[in-house]
Image (cartoon, rainbow over all chains, first blue to last red; front, side, top):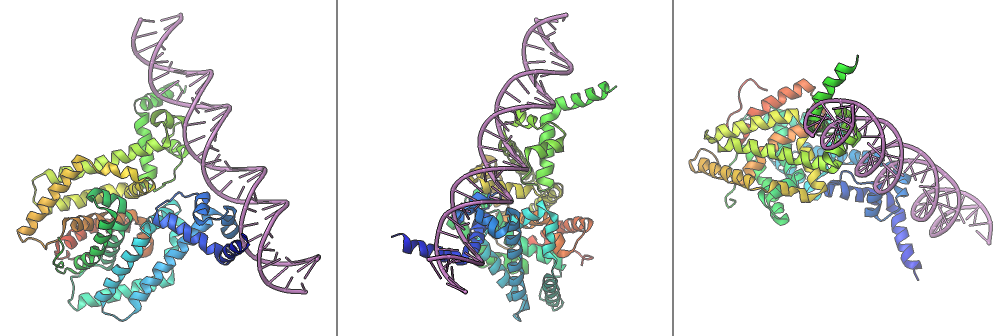
Amino acid sequence: MLNKFDKVVSVREQQQTEALIKEKARVLFFQKGFLNATTQEIADEAGVNRALIHYYFRSREQLLDTLLEEVVTEKRERVRAIFSSDRPFRHKIALYIEKVIDVGMAYPYLENFIISETARDPEKTKIFCSKDKQRSAVLIRQQLQEEIDAGRMQPIPTEHFMVNLVSMCNYPLLAKNVLQSVHGMSDTTYRKFLQERKRMIYCTIFNEEMPEGIS
Amino acid sequence: MLNKFDKVVSVREQQQTEALIKEKARVLFFQKGFLNATTQEIADEAGVNRALIHYYFRSREQLLDTLLEEVVTEKRERVRAIFSSDRPFRHKIALYIEKVIDVGMAYPYLENFIISETARDPEKTKIFCSKDKQRSAVLIRQQLQEEIDAGRMQPIPTEHFMVNLVSMCNYPLLAKNVLQSVHGMSDTTYRKFLQERKRMIYCTIFNEEMPEGIS
DNA sequence: CTTTGCGTTAACAAATTTGTTAAACAAATT
DNA sequence: AATTTGTTTAACAAATTTGTTAACGCAAAG
């Protein structure tokens, strides 16, 4: 009687237990901000036996390293995709903001995870030093300089431009609870606020007038 | 022979062991970003017996709560002091940026601590909901509105203005390791970068021209 | 000089957490 | 049907970490 059901479950999991564990670990770390989640809590979230975490990842530490590696690669890939395209520069920035905030709404504590992990072990910052990342950085620098040289925006050092951008995108995501509490916003209000921010950040960065209707 | 030395130490500590523990805990949590520091590590940092942490704070949890409470109060107090004074609005903002970055250079992971603690236990966000905080928020809202009404700056909702500001101030502090690594900056270079940011943030916020000489 | 109270210490107990292992199991292959 | 391979499980061992306690030392008060 349980035979068929068991089989379905077991087949589903057989193919993807490893992926399931990573997915649920992401939920705990990146969505819920549970930076101290134990192997047991991760296993529970995934509905699997705790030993499987060691079977697939050897240790808790290595699971975290895998997650870190993966999300950093994903981020890098997204950035590369946007800035390698041949849209106008401002369009690319708008896209970047859009992407960061959309991903960030699903995984608000992702940045917190990266920051905490690299603080705990500074060796891990090496992940950011890939050839690919360098290429993106060079691309952005060039394109920003073109924009400035063409007189379409105020001169600004690339590092400051980039830090302004990532700061305004990321901080409101990871400080979600704090900001909600300080400004007295409900969950839905905060989501709307983040949507508005997309345009706000763009306008602040490029010195444009704020859109009407928001106040 | 050890008598005198021992006495000096014991007198010094007798008066301030509790303060010493808090101070060294701050170093671990806010400077080094060691979010998982154990009671033993805190005791070692302070050079005292681990049991004293329980003697003075009952539990690790309560020590953290005390720290959280204190730093939030300090922040609040600084904000209140700045925005209650009767300087011009822009001057106040410049002061605010100055303060946040200076404090942040000493305690880069303070924000990380607040974010992580409130994520782990959302109940703790209540700390932010004091009458005093509300007063500051009202003050800022009024003063920003005056500035806008006087036509001295672009219209912008208070929440977005504030979030822009705190984002650009705080994010580069807590993402210190990440940004240093990505942009290949040494410790001293990064300190200089943060100093430059004070003016950069001001200019970005108020739409002013960047100062010459930086590129 | 003794007593009292506070700060400090080492030693202990308990709980939590990680990692290992040997056995059980299911599906595919011979 | 027996075997093999990869996956899952419960049980165990070890390490880490927290919190408690009883004893100690010392300075001030009686």
